[in-house]
Image (spheres, rainbow, N blue to C red):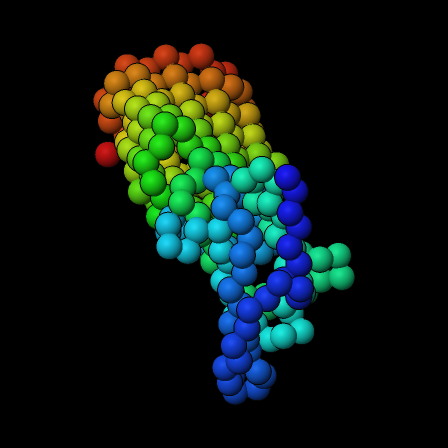
Length: 232
């Protein structure tokens, strides 16, 4: 089932005054979701909140309300800008909520933050471009983090049994505060990766990526050209 929600049609607004413009508070029903993808440089905060699950919140002037398009396809929510607003600046930060989250992706030059998330068997975070994706306090059996095609920054913290980190390009993966029993890093490019493994660490790939690691793991280094350094 595919549901496309344009905020200009399904908005619930209450007006509040601002110094130069009239702002509205928007509370939209976007449907329950477990995967989130953000496009077009929109700043978004995600929160795990059962009471507000399936809703999006933001404040903006009424003429910007129609800028956002929310598409929910089978529990996979995509947020993007309408075609006529692709180059619009000074967009508000959105807040979206669901009961749980298993995958998140930022494909724009913006900041996407996961502020709280429930424990899950698997969690995946993916960043494309020059933006930022920040995931705090994740608890999962397996965590996969991917950074590709840009100079962005992916930050992940928490705990897991297994961490799989993949970097392509010149970006940065900061996962040294993600404490994993076993971890693997695959890198191609000139970026950097921080990782924390307590048991085993596998390193794969080629290029001049710098790999910084915490812990005292058994290391299997099958890379060519990558620089491996222990963090104190």
